[in-house]
Every structure is written in structure tokens, then in C-alpha cells.
Length: 498
View (cartoon, rainbow, N blue to C red):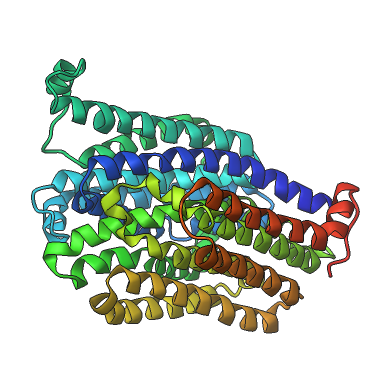
């Protein structure tokens, strides 16, 4: 059980940084939704969708290639140097080329008066893409504490600037009685508007690069072209998978703008984006787990009991996700106030998106079979299939159902990818997951949610208490069923998976 303890410890450290960062960032949602209109917040949601998509293109799977070749190659420094130089060159080309066409790009995405937004977005992508390799190196070296520190500083700078520009200067600019009125008049530019969100992010990303300088300059630079070609061959299917995966994750917010009537499109994007944020806890857990799990899976691939270990990890992962689903949904009556009143029109998408993200997390767990066997093309096949589902269903459902169509599409996409990956992986790299236990936990979480939703309604203190008793019930069931494994984990023994 040392391996599971190590994974839990690494997840906790990565999770601390990511949870703190995401929770702090989560508190920006009220700042945005109480200070911007749904249409203005729609611009933020849309442009961050582009950022998420393009970051995959600019990193082109090199992070995972670094993990893989750091295990198989004797000279880890050469692997790191080759990956870093590759990202440096490609990022410079990307930033230079797109900056030249900032104005045409702004017109293309229907923001012709804000080419400055486009330039800031391009620079954010460039900085985050290049620093992905130093961050990957920290993960590969298990330097989770330094990783966490840099991430937290980055997000704190970002948040502080958001609060300063939007929470203080924006309001003071419009209020001559404010003590900050004079400062706001000299600093704040109302024509920039939501652009201050991107300025804050850009400054945070630049400071993050400065903090990563030791990982960038304290290496012996060498570029092995033969190694690079093998890394690219390994990474290219992951790039395709990443593009398809990001299509699944972000394309709905982009398509909403172009498939709905222009007079409501940006507003609908804003509402959907704000409600998507309420599923933040599931997203946080999955992301933190991924940070720790990917190098962990590779490092234990050659162990005798690796498959047994992967099965145990999946079981505990499902428990955590099911708990997050139950806890979020049974407390939605008060969680919803984190977003502005006009944004709550879309609150009914939250359970659908939570389940969709749960399916995505399971798919990530299952994806280890094609990464460990070197059959990364299957990642492209599976996410490509998901991308087709995403595009077809979004084009079909958005004109009919609006953002609800996007939510159901997201669930259909990830659920299909999860199921198909399980059956294909069972042929190439069979892992005996405890399906009975996994399905039992998922069924229990859904049953508790429907009980609270249909039989314990309202937002009174009594209702909140009763709903949280259902959450406690879920925890009790888990403790009872997992008690043998928990006791052996505490005693550092290897539990028999039931």
C-alpha cells in the first residue's frame, strides 16, 4: 500500500495548490457575475474556450512524451532539454505569427474593436505553453511542493489584480464618492472592460515564468534530433487526442455563440459558462488527480501488481467523485448564490455537467492502457469519436434546446468515450476493475440526489441539514464497505480488492 499512500500524498500536495488556486479563482465568479452582464461574461467564457483549445495545439503532447521517455531513456536531462527547446521554438513561432494577424482574428471571432484582447490571449497561451515543460519536469521529479508554490503565487497575483481592476477601480470609476475615485480615474479605462481579466492573467503567467527560471536556465542545453523525432511520433497521436478532447470540452461554448440568434448568443454563453463553474469541485479533483496520477502510473507500470494497483485507484477515484456529486447537488440551494441572479437561469445544467465530468475522469483512468502499451493512436480514435458526437449533437440540439443541448451533449460524449475505452482496453491491457462496487457507488449517489431533489426541497436551514444527512449517509456506507481496505491501508498492508 506504499504506492497508494504515495499517490494519495502527491495528489494531496498537487491538490492543495490546485484546490487553493481554483477555490480562490472560483471566488472570482461572483466578482465577474455581479459586475459584468451575461453578455460581457460571455466574452470571457468564449475567449478562455479558445485558450483551452489552442494550448493543446501549442504543447502538442510533449508533456506526456517527457514522462514516457524519462522512464525509457538513460539521460533524463537530454530528454528534458530536447522537449524544452522544441516548445521554446514552436511557441515563439506561434506568438509571432498570430500577433501579426491580431486584427483579422478579432474580426473573425466577431470582436473587431478588441484586437488587444486577441494579443493578450495569444501571449497567455505562449507563456502557459512554454512553462508546461518545466512544470512537467517538476512533476516527473516529484517536486510537488515547488510545483504547488509557483501555481499558488500565479493565481494569487491573478486574483489580486482582478480584485483591484474590477472590484475596486471599476466601481470607484463610476462612483465619485469613492475614496479610490481619483486613483480609478487615472488607472481604469472603461473601454478595456472585461479585458482586465486577461491583463491580470497575463501578468500572473509572466511572474510564473520568472519563478521557473531555475528549471529553464540551470540545465545543459542539448537537442537530440533523433530523440525529438521519436518523441514527436509518440506525442502526435496525443496531440490529435488532445485536440479532439478539447473539442469535447470547449466547443459547446464556441458553438453556442454561432448557432443561437445574435441578440442572445453572448448572453447564453455567459450563463452557461457561469453555471459550468458550479461543477468546480469535480473539475478540481480530476485535475489534481491527473497531475499526480500520470507520472505515478508510468512509474509503477513495471511492478508485478500494477494492474491490481490501477483497479484499487479506480475504486477510490469513483468514491471521491460520487461524494463530490452528492455533496454539491444536495447543497445547490445555497451554492447557487455564488453567481449573479441573472446567471442562475441555467442552474439546472449543473447535475448533467457533474456527471459528464465524472465520466471524463473515469475515461482518464482507463486511458492508461493505451499510454502504457504505446498504442496512443487509440487515444486519438476515442477522443475523435467523442469530437464527432460533440459536433453532431451540438449542431442538432443547440438550436432546439440552447445551452441545455450543450450540457446533454457533453454527458453523451464523455459517457460514450468511457464505455468504449473500457471495452477496447479490456482486450489490449485488461484490468479487473470492481464494476459491481463502482456501479453501486454511482447508483447510491444518484439515489441520494433524487431523494433530496424531489422529496426534500427548499433552501431553509432544516432542508440543508436533511440534505447533508444524506451526504453523511453516503460516507457511512463507504466506510462500512471499504473498512477492510481502509484498515489494511492504515496498517500498510495490501488489501484484497473485493
